[in-house]
Length: 425
Image (cartoon, rainbow, N blue to C red; front, top):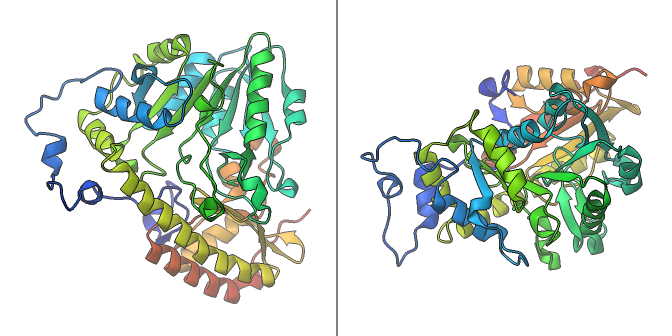
């Protein structure tokens, strides 16, 4: 991503919803009957640039607590939230504070590499809890049981939506954890079982749930589907649960670098806060002011409505192209119902296309950027063999970017398909 995104004409590898400016954000929160506000109403230039509230602004943490507490049996206190510069910093704090040599970590896979590489770098043994494409990228709870060891300290899941087959609508009423890049959504029953297993282990196992995409449910709405709760609300009494999130993905504000971690466990919170004292110290006052406004009752509904509609419409555009590729025998996929990404496998003559070469040539020759799955998600312990042929497509940029990128990509594939190298057994 770092190497190629600035030179891309059509970046459809990005995982964030199309970004908004502060001006656009303010317009989303302005009502026709209310006063128009400006950026100066959020943050005055005369405000002294101190560290501010060390653990995060009260306004921002209160708005976050209100979001977590919708329908919650056990309300989350605002003081049980730590504000950090992005979910990446929040995840790192949890891993750095809780994991070390002699510990064992189980991580859902494929997922964001930080979640399994950082524990390894800290000296922990890591087992990958694999999702299975042949089962619509679902996880097997019996496999989890087989992975648990006496020293298992942490189970990491990625609550990040994207792909789930719409063919069985009854399943949609049970959705819980989605995943990036596959976007498979875990049944709520599995999440409940996972917490039960963690709670009966001696000592109890902490579960870290990266929920950066969680609010972005878009496809199931026509079937009366209600978005699932945060893991913090999946079990009202088990304290060893940590959720992380950010403004980057579902809220279109990657540039302000605001994320958080939340837990009902005061001991877990204090461990993370102690690590935070020597990493973040605090987070920008100005960024937190923008974030607090974005998550306020006056702005949040409009912001999410904008992004959900953009995602749903863009998914239809992507689906129309993938259906063509399926008909031609070029691809296979599990269609997304939520989030921002899709995981598509490109094949010819029954063999996987070399994804890295596919992506490099596509961008060099057309300016269209997508992400090779084996490079982005193939665990290096197996030589990068996992997910050969897979490409992650981010389908929630501005609509004209997606439409233009897919049109150019399809025309290029028609010309170059037979010349693309295949993965040899």
